Amino acid sequence: MKKIIALFLSLMMLVALAACAPVEESHPTSEFSVPLDDASYVFQAATDATPLPGGAVIALAAAESGFESGAEAMLWKGIQTFASNFGYTAQSFTYGSAEIATAEDALRQASESGAALVVCRGEEMAKALYAIQGNYPGVQYLLFDDEPHNEDYTSYSTDTSVHCVLFQEEQVGYLAGYASVMEGYTTLGFVGEDEIPSVVRYCTGFLQGAQEAAEQQGEEVSLRVWYTGKIEDESIVSSRVTEWYRNGTGLILANGASLLQNTVDAANQTGGRVFATDWDQNELGERVLGSAIKCYNAAVQQQLYSFFSGNGAWSQEDAGHTEKIGFTDGSVALAGSTWRFSNFSERQYERLYEQLRNSDLKVEAYADMDTLPDTPSVTLEIQN
Image 1: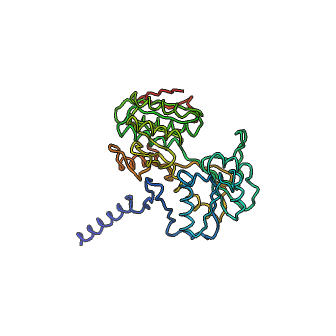
Image 2: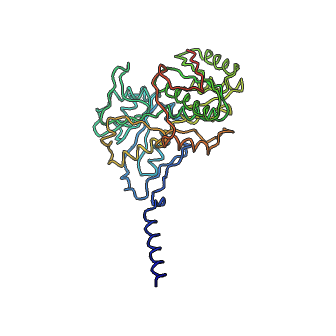
Image 3: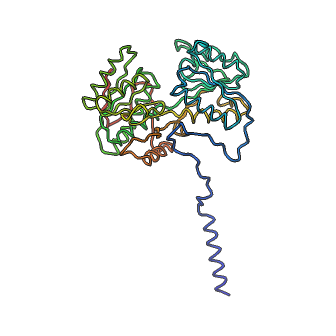
């Protein structure tokens, strides 16, 4: 009997200890996946989510040329995918054609089309939206990459019908800088058109990522920076970046369509490498090592789901406000449709992304080049 009682007490103690111990299986597993190929993204609602009502029209207003490739093309892909999966209708209104001359014309036509939500992007649409916002009751707007402002940028105002989304370019740049140094490039360059906050964030993120990788690798890295300004003669750009490559620069991150093409041309001549930005541009050739992208397709699908989950209106925290997106919701990435890295693996990329997402590594945002992060392993040379 004593043995039975002792056994019983032992079992009770084990049960008590087990009850006090953490049970990891009780925590829900994360459904987050580190982004690679934005073009293949399809938003999946939770299995227990309330079905969306469907039936409404979603319109995209954009430049006609933007549908060929680039940011607007990815937004359009996301809108179409979302509309198909959740029972909505997608329409597009383009300017730059004979029918619609300006961004404001396209935005007005979209607003008068019966659409519940009009999606648009960029500087020209921000000016157009500044002019017409609030004039179409019942129509809501989603603006990417800018906030409504007047022609000379002296006034910014966002109506409650508008929600603005800005990507954190410093996070995109960080991924490119880290990957470049881990791949083995220690003489880097950055080329951007204007020293404005969004371009500066790309540059300073690139700098911070290079510093982290250089410190981990025990390397000394150099970074040349050039803000070109508005140069009509593109041969000047080609000549400068070609000179950089021939004088030892191994890789240049180029921000801006014409700058990127000029840099790719120079890389083809010299054997240098290029990092693209904004969307997946790896198709420009083997000299493009990778693309540090804003995930427009994923972001617009997530925003549309949030909007229509709120009964077709922006929530109080979104209406008239600007949201910054990045690592947390998988809105920035290294494009992996073509993975050209030899020394920097996809597994290393995924590990880096999780460290950044969990704030184990920090990326600071800088709006100008006057105050910069401390980078003891990276020598910075600004060539303006």
